[in-house]
Image (cartoon, rainbow, N blue to C red):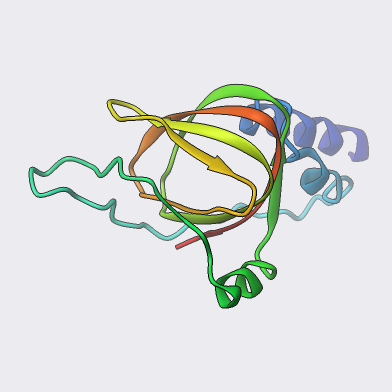
Length: 142
């Protein structure tokens, strides 16, 4: 049973993260546990534009000291230099700790995000992440 659950976790990590991103450590702590239950996140309505389409607007700003302090309590995620497609089921705000990335919404303009920036991505948006410098970020879904 221990070997099998480790295999399932490894496969799950590969399915969730086809690029060299730091999702594996989160799954490594689950090895050997057989009573895991997956939860479905609550439904979040995508931000809609006046024409009825899904918003592709990525908001990037310099965070306040209060926002930086709040983000310190959020989980972290990291990724090496790579390029990959991504879709947002929920709204996300992140604070880039290190690195640099260009995020291009499908049908939209590229947006540069660098260490120190706070970015918000709308639910329902599909895009391409082009990680220029290995990055780490704090993130929160809402």
